[in-house]
Image 1 (spheres, rainbow, N blue to C red):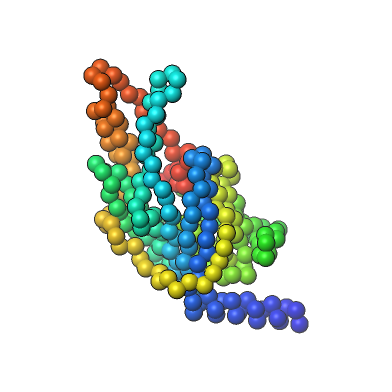
Image 2: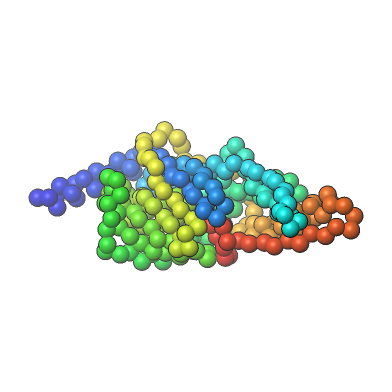
Length: 241
């Protein structure tokens, strides 16, 4: 009898989420950058969209040894967006191309090759399963609950039979933590506000950003001064393409 009741409950959840949009709210924690960024994830059984509300910062600092450090973070009122459905992944990003440029990119469908453990863990009201998967240079340990059927997100996560409650990169740099979930009246729309480009063009543009910023810094320095640029991708969600 208990099994029968459980099956009815899960079927009801699937039906309910299939007919309505819901919003799950996450904290995206980037330990390396020392930032916590709110993420809004709108979803139903067919599609989802994640919206990252980055706060921009641009500053040039100099330490006691005289080494210059330039930090740049680009954002706007719309935010970074990641649209997910079974056959498509489209994202919107803000990049630096002689100034801010908003781009729309259709990405390859991620394959995290999830390894699901039989081990469970209770987090708040949710009974969670554990999974491990890798994507573009990072490996993640994830806790997800089959009690809420949602195979998408947040971000580019996909392919699990339940909603992600926590996700942590193995190196401890990246964390996603579920804060709340509620019914939503907000529509799920494919991102359109930006310049369309291929994934290859996007990657090349991101690489050229460092050169553009370096040239701008050099133009502000006194004649004869030099600048050395050390770049790292250690804190990015994706470290390899």
